[in-house]
Image (cartoon, rainbow, N blue to C red; front, side, top):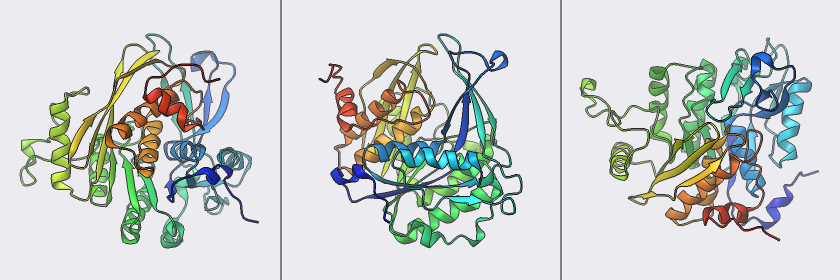
Length: 362
């Protein structure tokens, strides 16, 4: 029997999307409690790449997720959650104890911030199944066959050497097959050092079509004399249009394979109220989105929602300014949803927010 996503019946894109990464068990104390005093935890599942696959599937995009999870109840539960959101999980490997000796699903604890208190994350993902699996026998040409879009990021390669090799090998195969590749640097200081991240993610740049974020990547002013610094040195977290345009131009001058660069800029007024906007380079021009201000229910996954929004907009041929605004609106609306992923299943909901239309839909 062929399993179909019923949402695809109304899809107006021929794209087939696949992403590769780790899915984790997320444990969160209820009611903004602190981890050290919590007596119960709410369980859910998430992970950067899985969040993007889930968000796109809910919007009707044909989305597939590849990972390795242990063949036990936790691993099966994570896969079940993805399938319940119309994500294809056929390639997922349910590993045996022989294949992944520690035989565990990665997890993380989220302490949700409130007001002036910031959120906090504690990872427990060492020796998870995806980090121990030997990918050398995996046929990547077969895995990626038939897909038009591959998304990867900087979190999975931070987990282990075999995940780094998998990432680079997938990028090379995708380039051979003519698959559009998007990549989100997504630096996590608890997983590897800044220099490790920059060295590896810079290796990926020649294979990337759509770049999300401007770090962690080397962009030397002089390749022969690194003492002159990086083009991004001194650029603030909330740059001006001119500062951002200069960085974008430097990226595409060195890596002409890049067709689009996007980054969101966050203004944190408190742990419960933020503003977001985006800069987008596309078709030789830099665009600046509207500024969205909102209260936060759950911040985790906001960057992934931005990525999924951009990918959706590009797949559907949006104009550049609409691409930027749709991506930011996708991120903003995610902040109002509990859990890791943007489960919004109505494009019009995001477009209404994009146009700052807050009326009740009856």
